[in-house]
Length: 433
Image 1 (cartoon, rainbow, N blue to C red):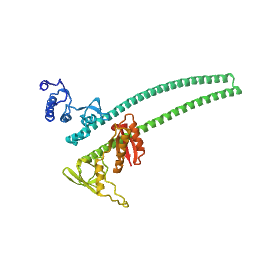
Image 2 (tube, one colour; image 1 turned 180 degrees about the horizontal axis):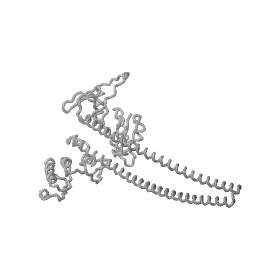
Image 3 (cartoon, helix red, strand yellow; image 1 turned 120 degrees about the vertical axis):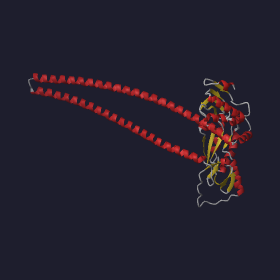
Image 4 (spheres, rainbow, N blue to C red; image 1 turned 180 degrees about the vertical axis):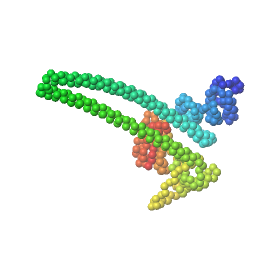
């Protein structure tokens, strides 16, 4: 009350857990109404909250901006870094799992709040993670640009020094040429004087003329060499200029291609996003999220969709389905096989409940190998193409034991570390044949 009454454009408000201390729905509503009044009075302030409605208010109103305290999902610890621009996640599920809340309790809580809220919270976490990744990329590019600027400055300094040296060499060559010209004139004058003093004696005159011809030839050779050096330098300069022009043309062509491709890529991404967001329709080919088996939607009745998977028809909630490419038609000469409906139903039920991740962190070596053995056998039996084994980093012993076992399994095509953004060396991704 006092804040709303006394605040103005020079006030600073610091509020922790805005709207707390009462029932969340009415507390969030009162907090949003009060925040609207603060914003109208152009008051400065920092407010912390877990209420989603306040985060939406900040996103939709000028003068208020969201912020998030960053959290390392891989190591499950706070980073104590503030990032402005996007709302943050409360990481409630992750923290509850870390401190030991039973998994069935977490599952019940997730069911109560609804998958839409859980997915929205996960998307917030993914946005923060991606922003950190691209921010690091931007910083690395900025550092590279700084290094490039230093290198260019060094090269420019060296070029300037070379040009100064070239001018000095040309000046010295010019002085040497002038000195040689003076010596030539003196030589010619002495030759004329000798001829006159000899009173045109034939033998002596011939010798003097021969010496003059040899000296003239020497001057011609020096001049030719100087011209050859000039031509060589000119040719080198022309070649370097052609190389620079070719590089500039190549760079311009590459930039033009990138500019041309970028709108196409954006258009394609927009079209793909439009297809993904369009509601599912009867006749479309789909698969259950996280599974590989594809089927066809026969009809959609309210909140359920009837989907045909091979010889089986089942009811599935539309939010559990995603579009998939139609399977290739079987070869005409393919041998026919018969599987009982009971076996099909059993395998299908097992495939629906199969999780593609297994967590063996904290297990002993023999326990982990035992669990991974059953996990890989089930995945191969059900036709799963890729699974993930969470073993953590630690001393690396568990990771080594698991990978030694994977080397011995014929159905394992390849295995490798997960991408560094999603766990790195703490997770092994296994591709199955």
